[in-house]
Image 1 (spheres, rainbow, N blue to C red):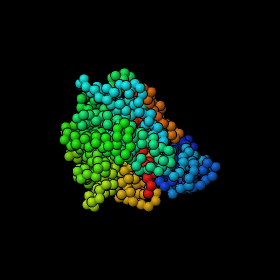
Image 2 (cartoon, helix red, strand yellow):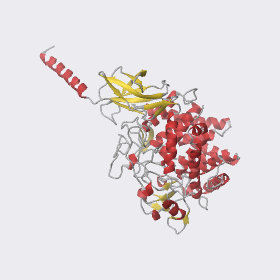
Image 3 (cartoon, rainbow, N blue to C red):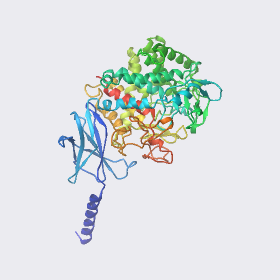
Image 4 (cartoon, helix red, strand yellow):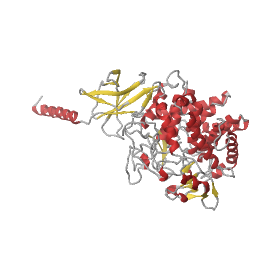
Length: 591
């Protein structure tokens, strides 16, 4: 080797050593709250230099090593972080109850994760009481709110309606919604009715655990609070009022019953279609009637109201749909409505209605495995309710007994769960974040986050509700099409997928941010609102998005300050905790 070659070799070795010495410390990303003993469990490690053959350990509270494993990887995701290597530490087989830290050693130096717990039904046990408390504190029940809501003006008229009750929508918004974004047709989220249905679902699915937590009465009471608001929101004509809007004003008398367009433009289009909260409102009332519990109304009145609202939408639904056409959101919300009425009444009329809606959803399945929203090939993607088509089909199958009908619905569930796993795992994805298919312009694309250029013209935000909905679909749907003894009752791939979504919410994400307030180590800042409302323990913030300014939602972004736009990331929103509640209910369901 000549002198020049020796110098180059020496310089290369020196630069390598320098980089090794000056590299940032490894980062361990982990669910900062808890792992269920029966479920999948993993962490992600980031390092600036590629590692090889590295092991990890679980350390108990006494400092003793109780489990050893080998890291998987490396993977890179340069669209998020340039020149970083990510590794996965899978300890799903570890089932010893206790409190732990994950430990790795790099160059002889140990690095420890945040604390976490492993326990039976750990997520539900740790978070359920706080979720109930969060909703209780979101009640629109201050003296000021109750007084003005006795007679809220219907936009464009001198008529008023008594719409007392319900929950404030977000930590920065005291408005009350059945749904918003109706004008965009394809993005309507389910809000107060979804929360109510999710609570009744928990009461009926995990009664033993709720009793153990002394939370059965409080969950039922909170569900009845939601049902009573839905009842008051049912007009004499038979439609639900969509929105009680505050205009973000501190003046309580500014509130109006409205329809909403972009940038808080209000209209008199406040009648809920199936997809605009009407379907889930009917479903919530029909289901809570089966509890045989009275709130401000008798249980029989809840059912009678659900029937009346359903009959009205059978005639008027497309009149209330902003584009005059039904799409997949109408189908899965109407399926929930018809199914709950079928379960509550055992009527062949609702049986036929449910079957027709299930067939509509089946027809919307693409060859690739994702749903089609409309008749023009638009892929179905949703920022909060992506798992709801599967949940609606699963709920329908809890009543359906005809094998032909069951086989068709099960085939759709299997195909969409297969697609969810495939689209999520076909790229480097160390966190297992659920990916999705969407159309941007004339191009069909797959991506991590929703496109910021969409039919709303302005709305995009973190997607923690979507993650909870897909985790729920993986468990509830997986038990029907991929059943397995032990664990959560599903095959491992689906258990990992579900666990990854909830772990992301609870801190295993590139910002190490636990989005459930006052849980874990790192939380978003407190957000205040009118009438003493604001962030509450157990509430979940919007979360992480694609990079601001990227129309297709590529890249990654999270901000706690953005000149008033930080709500996209930090604001708590009702659907996030509702879908988290559904997910942990599914995971805790006795097998």
